Length: 247
Image 1 (cartoon, rainbow, N blue to C red):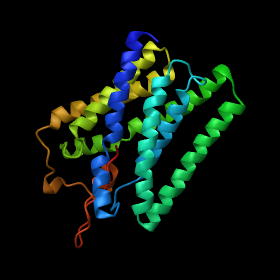
Image 2: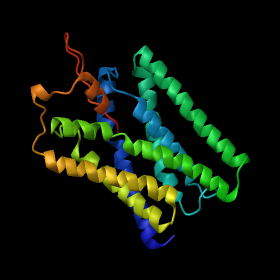
Image 3: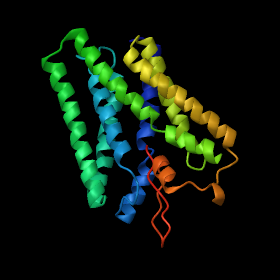
């Protein structure tokens, strides 16, 4: 691993860490209110699966020279497990059952990938199998803000698309994209290239609509749209303002 390759890996670790820690404010609110309200726990469970698969892929016996991929995603796995456990403890019964079931699914998929790659595959075939699995879920994770981008275009407001979250999506995707190119690893470069492009689109939207940070009453998002983009407020009277944002 040359110096440039290593430096982009370090920068990718730092920017990814900011992404993993972005939901802390949301979870402080959840813990304070002792309720997940209408926040969705699904993004955190799916991000956990991405982190687990990427951490496994980065191990030396799976793909050489990718240990920095393992370090950041191993850290991300630990953080995401905490988020998921908080959801399981504080969510309403129906939501709790759904998240617990999805969490079980994630652990089952990861265990299956580990088992197959250890006992059925060797060498390059092991790298291909684990790489495809990690790349697919990385793209799914990066694609999660698409509903928010649609809402920004519809409402012409960036109220629900924080600048720094968009910035670190761009920085994280770009740094790991370059890391993958330097290491000639398409399973790192391709999904993070997608992330870099989506981060760029978010920043462009932000600068187009940056002066419109409040949603006019006539353009206020519906409950369904709010649930998509993830901003929840407690229910008051007959009004319900929707829900939960991803990290």
